[in-house]
Image (cartoon, rainbow, N blue to C red; front, side):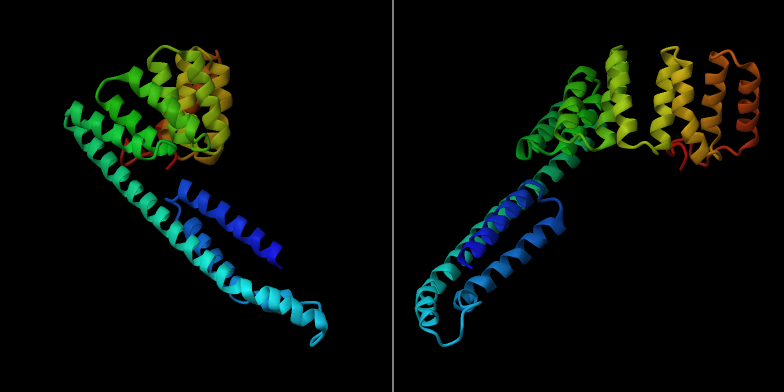
Length: 277
């Protein structure tokens, strides 16, 4: 039982470590404290656990109870100290998240107002407080892009993708910035990664197909667009790009049919809405 308790405490410590790393995920942190309560309950009654499987009233019971009973207060005290320590660590981490989010808000506002130095300092503070969070690097890349520094923005976008490779949006931003730098091979790799992460993302496929057309790759554009058209055939913007792809591929009839379909469909109420929404 003591070995089991030690193992449980070890699992709890590992879970708390992950909760600190991903402290912006409340369910993860909350479950860590629930687990802590289980550990404390187990530590509070080590004698009962120690006597499981032995005949009641036997000599071995009295010796085992004597050995386990003395360790109860120590285990409870250790669990309480550990819980308080993790509470302090969690509070510091939550404070860092709050400060980083506030700094990012300031950075975006400053970038929109053209206040370059303030935007740089605020975004630098955000990634400095929590350097492992990819979204903070993504927002820094957006701020630098808004300020007209595509090279620095691209470096920040690569950091965002490296630190959080499972989100498509930072990778898409890296693809767009790579294309602006005329690094089309890198852009293609990034777009391929975006479509692997979000194969059903209609807006992603629309943008990736446009990049393929800019690179005179109509076959790639068609292969990228066809799944999107099947999902969102109500959006004329998809049909228009599909018509361009067929035209570039030399299929005039298919291009005419796609363009006619685009003209038959109502235009989106807001042209800035994501394609397929």
